[in-house]
Image 1 (spheres, rainbow, N blue to C red):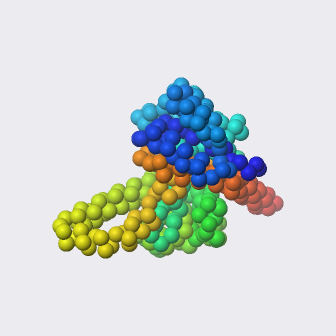
Image 2: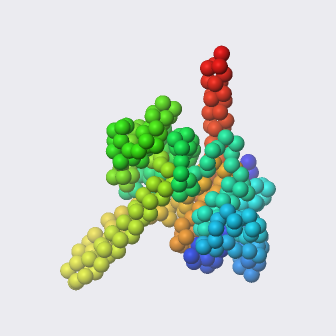
Image 3: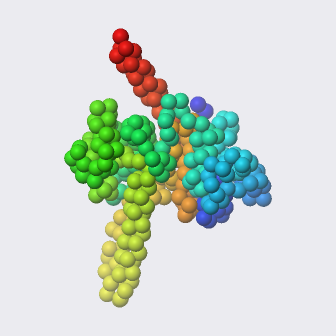
Length: 343
């Protein structure tokens, strides 16, 4: 692989696009000299930016996928939208990764339909790095698959392990199943069947995790169905927002509290940074042929910058390639076991 990594970027992705996207791309290009960008969006947005940045090329598009559209239908109909074009650039090897803070559903649909699933992957899954105070924790799935089978979660766990090792930098990550209790008999029939499968097939499986274990950093990887993971993640984000807002209100309530706030500002600033979701810039869709990172709709320029750089890192670490190798090996083991059983 060349030292230069090319990342396609959706100029229209996010609540504050294209302004923050352009600013974030500018920061990413300024921070490193081994990343180039293909900026996808309206000509009047992407061409002037590309003209003023040496390692950026413009890919003009004529369509937009909005947040309210049905994701799969929009992807099929709007083939010249920035999201579809960005994924197609990866498929055609004109870029090695794609970053967008646009419609999550459309990104998932385009990743699956345009970039394509890795052979043997039953369902691509959306992972996220939960910024906990003690250490980052990877949760998967957080919204791509609301209805799951135990076999899906086993694959989610294996893909998330690879991502955690390669991108977060955790050796031999410990994996837990998000459940309503620690005992293996807890939870629904689905949870119990998944527990049994993970216990028998995943050496790194450490048991059930309860909701309180997520932010505590008790485990390195939390695996769950997309419905549960999305609710959990949104609860964490909402709680953090309310909590920091309330702390700010209390600290500025009077002259005395303002004095106290001044003495605590450094510690509070460090805490806020440790739980800042902008650190990695987005959530990867694991199981597709290439690197696809989905940013938060409210991403600021810093989040966009980090999203572009994280996408490039996923490419360099060949996360998709390692997942493909793992899935192929798993399929081979399954075929061998089936042949032995038939003898």
